[in-house]
Image (cartoon, rainbow, N blue to C red; front, top):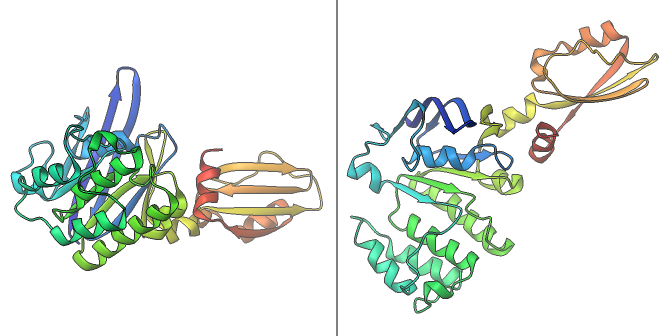
Length: 291
């Protein structure tokens, strides 16, 4: 298995505020991975550490075989990054910044640029200072994808886009992954967007990795147990990995971190109750995790 990104024991603090705590994960080449987490979970800090914009306190990051931040020119050319706020040269026009950026790369897909400009209603003659927030984000995305890097790292890439443009951009990401095998790592808090694009999720909670793997595996692990008993249910249930619990007399709804750690039949016999399992959507899991 070829890991294009390898992160080991990554931690990052700002003064007394610890943002990332002992993160370790690997990203396989050609995969599409969504980083999901609430505001303040550490998504932006993680992505900025990956590309060397921020220096980690502890841990190692390897991308395309190079240790961060000592990336070779080739590795730098093969990492496309778009932050939450588009950092563009306001005095230029759209066509000027495209021509300017193109000079730094050995490869540039002019056809893709033209198509995205048309799809996203961006005029080459528009001055960047006059663009809306959403238009600036579109332009930043075009500049990042045009060199067709091996890795795209995107921080909340569709947050400023309208729903129609979001869908078009998501389709573009899918096409790039299918056509070119690009590895795509993007942060979001919009679960529906993540499910449309990614097969894998890296779920952050308060700077720690709660889960990394296939979305389907996450849904199989995190479930809600509905318990119905003939007598009042004890608040101290013998269940491991409880995320949330709603106990009301003889009935209870319990969301658990990993149902595979629980012997349901044994539990039902132990507490003399009927137990049914409810599968949860990714959005349900996200809400339960941050309740």
